[in-house]
Amino acid sequence: MSHTLGIRQAQKQKTRQALLDAALGLLEEQSLSSLGLREVTRAVGVAPTAFYRHFRSTADLGVELVEEALGSLHPMIESTVSATGDSDDRIERAVGLIARHVDAYPAHVRFIARERHGGVQPVREAIRRQLARFAEEVKVALAEHPESAGWSEEDLLMLAGLYVDQMLVTASQFLEAMEGAAEDRERVARLAVQRMRLISIGRHHWKE
Amino acid sequence: MSHTLGIRQAQKQKTRQALLDAALGLLEEQSLSSLGLREVTRAVGVAPTAFYRHFRSTADLGVELVEEALGSLHPMIESTVSATGDSDDRIERAVGLIARHVDAYPAHVRFIARERHGGVQPVREAIRRQLARFAEEVKVALAEHPESAGWSEEDLLMLAGLYVDQMLVTASQFLEAMEGAAEDRERVARLAVQRMRLISIGRHHWKE
DNA sequence: TGTACATCAGTGAACGCGCGTTCACTGATGTAC
DNA sequence: TGTACATCAGTGAACGCGCGTTCACTGATGTAC
Image 1 (cartoon, rainbow over the protein chains, first blue to last red):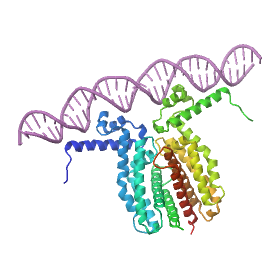
Image 2: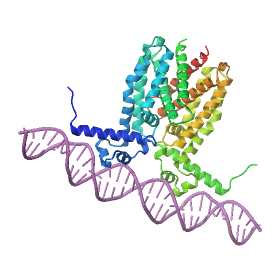
Image 3: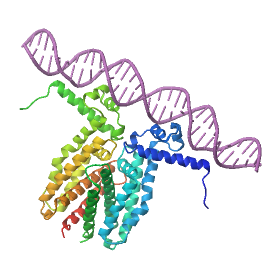
Image 4: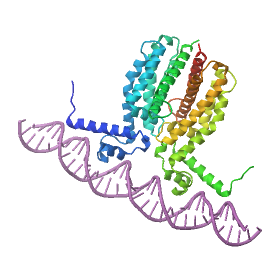
């Protein structure tokens, strides 16, 4: 039962998305806690009051941005961890995937890095929830690996969390490299691979 | 040649420190990019214009806070890494030290976690510089360990960076635990120790 | 298909408020003799 | 030690400006008959 949105609904969605996009753009240079509602509507070209037809506040908009930025990543992450091949193959592929994701969605990545510990509690909470889901999913995928024989659930979750945090660190390093900081792209990729390799070696000798 | 500050200089320092302290307090609930100069002076009880006698802007004040928060940590970090005892001893001691530091200076820790990827470029840069110094110092300390035989400078720096990032992750998890989030203190400590152990195991089998 | 009414996304004026910055100032502290 | 002048941390009034929020509104879209 495919359902076409009415003209009114479609236009509303379009404005809503324009507000989200404009906010994301403005957040490249500031934090959510200083983002003004009028800034956002000005960037879109609608009246300030139009904002309230879509969001209660900029914090509310921020929570929606979290869903947009992280909600769609679950399939990608799971497929990476459960991919076939040996450890080194998987690591190379994972780092490549992170690099491509940062290239494709730099503003989303920056937003998550910035607001993970930012000044807006509901947004921090939304990010924490999504990252906990990631860790849980990685844990389940790791449990499938033969190397995980004998691992407790707790240790698997510990390792999964380490991977998720490492993924975020790597993503934000790629971002810094894009901004023309000291580190270049290739160096970041090499470093990330080495870190993951070291963790992977620790994993293989954990149950000795 | 011990030099006592004049009354005027001493009073100026006192006001300056009061401004830094007030700002740090206000930053528990917001980001630096939304911190107002008038908020800070109001909290201290001086006229808004007094602010300019000490700082050019809130960004400038932020950079000073970075020095206050991280500048004094160098001796502590170095002594932890170069401490005697086996790996597990050192790990337990390091995690304990982090826990105590977060207890003693929660606002400083929160500030660094928040502004590391925050919306104020000079502050991000100041934090990046201090963390790079930490990594360099940890590298030098690690090089002294007998386990580091055969390690390249690059690999040592990779490992040092991994430790520094892990230190920050652990500190911010302790902070979340203090805020009464899902995780409790003990669980965070246990998890941090396990992560460090896994990394340490990876380290011992790196050159095989 | 056409008509009459309901809905509701976006408008625009208005409000009170706190912001950052300027400026000339004051009066305690510092210094030269 | 006392006096005359210099310094300068902190003051307080004033400014123009953009903020979030309220309200009654408009007119295109949706719906019932």
